[in-house]
Length: 78
Image (cartoon, rainbow, N blue to C red; front, side, top):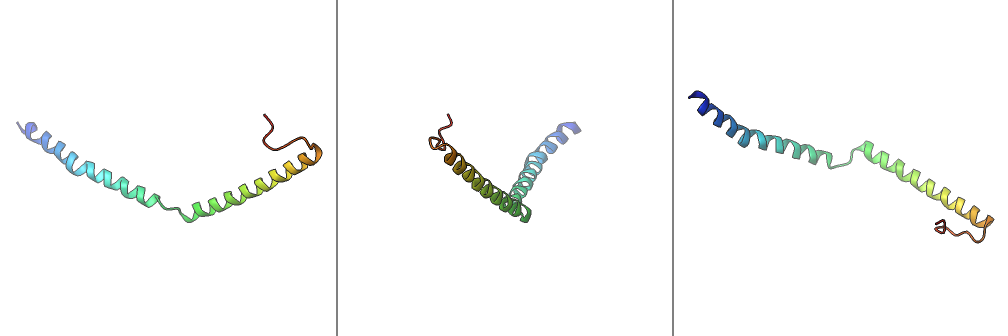
């Protein structure tokens, strides 16, 4: 008879206390992680600089190829 009362109490406790606690915990963690850290911002700045340098290099290569082969145009490699 004791198990007949104990099990529903445990299940209700898990549903009405445990589940909301877990949900609120992870929502809080998600909101904290929603902002960029200083390290993330520095990494993004580095990646932006790298992408800009690579774009400059690609344009230089395209100019060199276009000077060597006047019929070549970027995007006609297909």
